[in-house]
Length: 225
Ligand SMILES: Nc1nc2c(ncn2[C@@H]2O[C@H](COP(=O)(O)OP(=O)(O)O)[C@@H](O)[C@H]2O)c(=O)[nH]1
Ligand SMILES: Nc1ncnc2c1ncn2[C@@H]1O[C@H](COP(=O)(O)OP(=O)(O)O)[C@@H](O)[C@H]1O
Image (cartoon, rainbow, N blue to C red; front, side, top):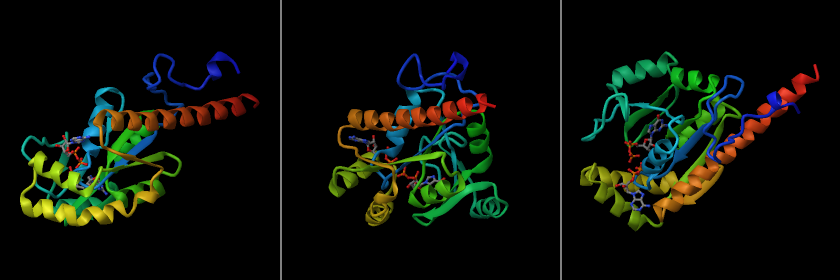
């Protein structure tokens, strides 16, 4: 293999921070968990350590929480606007979660993957299923478990972003979300946050290496004409 055929594996760090290349399609890291288990915290930590990792900003019909910004945390839309986006194919996947619409805009994902950018998705199990079907071979998934349901409830309360009725709704849905854990490639328990972030980072690095190997093999096979 000549140096130019080398797959674009990270050389400077195990995190794969090299500049993206069009010859290497990006990978999608899906992180799912019951509400309050820590998936946003983990996804934010991954992105903070890796500015090239893109966050897929979802569309939702729920109200913004204090501190949430349009276009950064979510695109906040009415139910009518959301339904129109779903009907016209603007959403790569969508689902109703806790009685609200949530969906992934299609165009940014397709552009990012084609230009070799990796993306992290904070979506539920329904979105994970749809994304896997829509982007075969591009998705690696991670399910985050809380140490216990008691800790999960305590985290939802301490986050103080939802009223007691909404917290009760989310706790009632937690068992159902957790029942889908076997559909995911990897499962971690978010007990100590630093360890959970390290585990998530290892999943991302492994996905990048696997993708680089595929790309490297394709380049090698092409070189035989
Ligand atoms: N299918 C799907 N689920 C989403 C999307 N965006 C967010 N979700 C999920 O919707 C649920 C509620 O999200 P949110 O209201 O932000 O609450 P949080 O998860 O407790 O911070 C979570 O399970 C998210 O993973 C999306 O684009 N598609
Ligand atoms: N390992 C952890 N230990 C203690 N608190 C945590 C841990 N991980 C996350 N948290 C806290 O729990 C709350 C819920 O986390 P968040 O990332 O918002 O969950 P999710 O996105 O899954 O709904 C937040 O207040 C967060 O700071």
